[in-house]
Amino acid sequence: MACHEDPRLSADYLDPDKRSIANGLSVRFTDGSELPEVLVEYPLGHARRREEGIPLLMDKFRRHLAHRFPTVQQQRILAASLDPVALAAMPVTDYVALYLPG
Image (cartoon, rainbow, N blue to C red; front, side):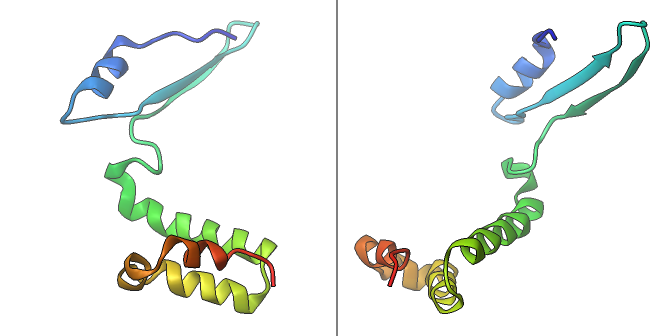
């Protein structure tokens, strides 16, 4: 395995109009054959893909809450987390307490 910098991708990362966080992957086999390069200039989670990423992030948040907390506690955490006005007014200690057992 070898990792090589693509100067164009580095330049796009430093360009304030792009701020691309690009990565590419090329696979070449020992027999000389290769797969087409896969390049992602703006990965999921990048500001340019926020609209696409937020629903997936919310699904992940709910899924992980479900693995850790009872339903009623999940609902309290979600209610606080999804209400920006209430969340901004809530003391941090109260928010953190939502994640405590009991």
